[in-house]
Length: 129
Image: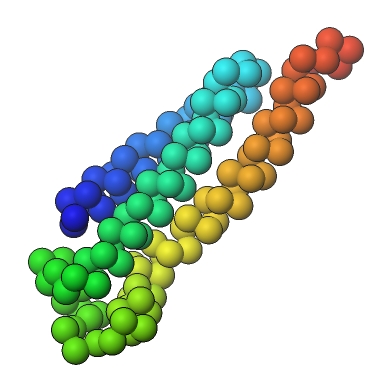
């Protein structure tokens, strides 16, 4: 499961890079399919980071001490409540928890902007930038 979490973080990084670069090209070319693609890459980034957070929580619950984070912030005697809270015990876990929340907010905002962009793009009465 530790490989799964690491791989999902790596894949999230690739999706985020694509979303940034594709977003720049989408703004320049005003291509609707590229806009949708970059928005979906942002949503995929959110989902992949969320999966890596669940993977870390699973490692904390199963006392898998092959990960350094689990070794530093957990032990076998902790109750369930404290194992859930161990996700926030270190900086890495806190960032891993906050990122999906921030990404979900950005994806919602990007969805609203995408809809307004596509409406403006399909409206022939608007002047191009």
